[in-house]
Length: 527
Image 1 (spheres, rainbow, N blue to C red):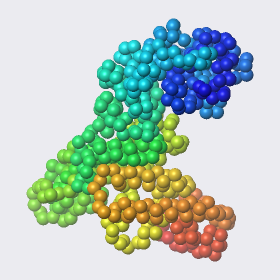
Image 2 (image 1 turned 90 degrees about the horizontal axis):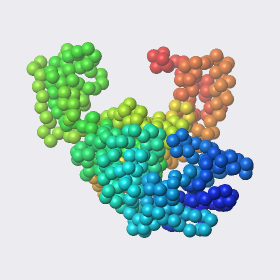
Image 3 (image 1 turned 90 degrees about the vertical axis):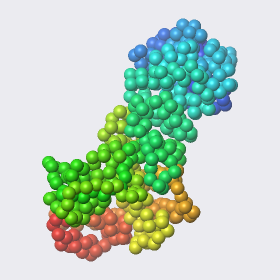
Image 4 (image 1 turned 135 degrees about the vertical axis):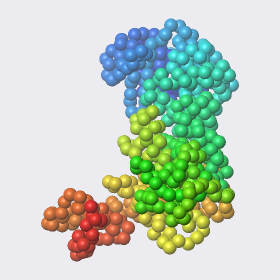
């Protein structure tokens, strides 16, 4: 049976009014044995008349579209889209995107009608544009992205003329609605085999035209811990994240800042000068923190000179130097660096990439873009926090305690404890950690142990968070007249103590002592 009982119910009624055919993905999937929840239907009647009939039968049709009108019916997850037949069946088929989507099904006679050879192409695993592919893509350039999705999702080989037309017209995508492009890209990223789909987009030069921040990662040599360049590493991470849009986007963009921050280790020395609000050592601009205290002094700097901005040196270490002329030297066998690339990646995504799309419409959460930026900016947090444990060394703090503090720091979103954020960060970290990097024996076991300690702590924190009772604090605050910023800071302090140290919020004496300690805290801390 094609479709659901709801679909059959509606089609049975319409068959008494006009000629009706089901077409598109549902028919294609029927031949492949895949059930359909959405049907595309063509009818030989005016859509306004159809909408009126549907309304008389008790349905709630929606008439949509200006250029190409559609009547749509919804019921739960089931959907029917009706369009008016354009000319003969063959003429209608030639206006569709691909032959495999131009097979018709006659529900009255339960038979397939194949005007342009779609069944033959489906059987031969071929994806071919209807009629002249170049005309089809010119009519709707988003079909080029759909070509990628269908080819990879259905395991089809794109026919040569169709592929060539896609390459030729990829620049026309800028004429299409941003929402439609974003939706189609999202479907591509959610494919079980997302990596080959992204490779196809790259072969079409999509990234060169629309996401140069990704295209320039190709051939970008990484440090000695990586066996792949930045592009190949990105694809490996993408493929190994769960098929969740936020995670796939984070994987795709997590290292975009590496091009900006790529550098090699160097030494530079001389007198540190300030020009405007910028710091210079000879001909080089210095980038780093706490440089103002060195103004006018002779210093020696161990830093990293940026590959693509060679006038800039990122400061790693600075110390007093001899009173001598400015100089520069590469460190022999110096390290390859991408200092703060995670922060730069988040900046690029926020300022340059997100404004080109409408991802907020399709992400799982209303704060999806904020969460995306958070896990991109913090994707190195796990490796940096647990560096000793990953090396097999014993740190000063027990693993259980470090796991607890990590789970709290990255689960707390400023308003509540958010286990989804923590899980997303751990999923991206895992995909990144094993993303084509050189590994030693036992690394998998060490990594698994660390992640398990964080997940166990996260579950305990979530339970503890749900148990917290804030009424005693609210009562005490009313009695003391505590409000505003000081109340907020005191509550933040108690929240952390309650979650991480088991502080009892219902113990009035302990609460009073905590407040006295808070009051005695130096005012500068509480500002």
